[in-house]
Image (cartoon, rainbow, N blue to C red; front, side, top):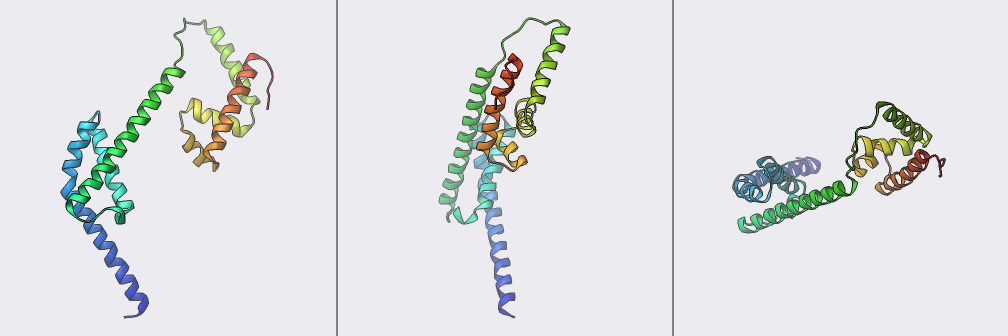
Length: 182
């Protein structure tokens, strides 16, 4: 056996051993984690997602899972609790954002006024440069997150937020009839 073949065989053996360990880890701890996740989440589906995300963290970094049943369980529980906290924060942030951006209840408008308003908004959008318009449409109309838009356009999240800020101001100025400001 050559040195290269021995290295490949050792790597395959280590990968198989890590896979076996993660499989055993799942078999031993998934029910306990699911019960905990079910108590900490709103639905069974969310609890299953949390458990899946917990084990995905273990798969992505198997070397960070400590040895020993109690240490493994403690690590997995800590990861699960942290994932729950992250979801709670996201939910609270979305709720806060929804309250601040909630549209006031408006009386029904006549169809002609709605058509004129829509036309004004589309003309204002057309006045924006293409990248800024794309970012505004993806974020405001399609509901895409800043990170998703950044990944799709190959720019940083900071750049997307900057375009959103500038684009909203330009759009508001154009709708008010003040012309576009860069």
